[in-house]
Length: 385
Image 1: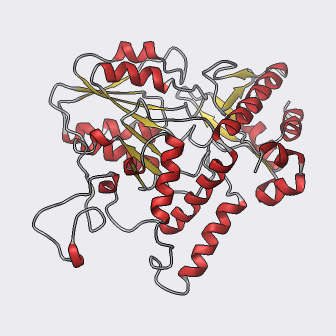
Image 2: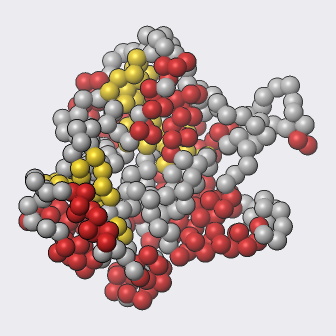
Image 3: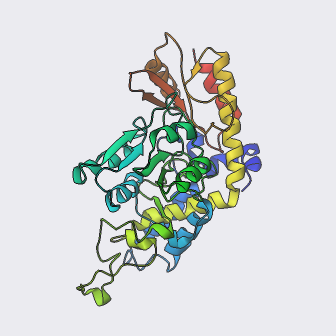
């Protein structure tokens, strides 16, 4: 599938993305609708599962295919990918599976999405002498190499950041920050859910990454990816164990806990197979289209929105140009009731997001994907007061 063909042929677009038939969906930074290919893959599996063993009916080798597709997207090996579910689960595996000596510290950003804040603060439950620091960003969501450098010291063991800020859309320079941290022997964990599937998001300079499929990957809920760099797998102890990740020949429990020599050590039990069927389908779709083409289109729509919103007097909460942009464009208008505007759009079958910052400021958040059109955005902007 080529994006150009999709956008030229409205019948094709509506067929592949059924949501477009009756609404304009601009909330992919929230929970996305499923493309036809993903829904059909899940339905195909469910039909088979209704006629026999739920595991046996899933074609042999598809779990490995899913890992390989994810690894290609992230730039790693299939042996470094675990299929574990929600983003918070992968991040919690890191927070709970590493040893943090007394007096050490962990650095995160306190105004990230809670899934990438709470696991790190919870470290203090078992390691009360570990300090959990928050980065001081110059503007909401704008986490830079300079702000990271100011927060770490010789006692820092890990830095955990999001690939893009969920409210303002500021995109993280993963490569620059990752190189900086690796030179200092500091582990780097990335919450990749707000860019994976929309932007090139690689793990060359990260040690861990977690991302669910239900946002930009256009996949089902709780069908996520967890990357653990091979060199760190012995260091990252599994905190969840069971028959899925500990050797048990003939399902007989053994005295010794023997783990796989790959990221399968973090998969403790039965897989979410219907989720995996959907995840495999969305990864295949992204592979077919090409992440570079998707990123170009998403950024083109984001830049278009920034320009038109500013022309109508809206203030953009995040970046307006440059490398810091992602697919998220959040705005507010002085004196305007943003909740009422959000509700008015919803009444017209336009799906956007309403988010509130720590000080209570309401932001109208748009997050278009590659299948959205400028014509849709023009209609949305025309309805804004």
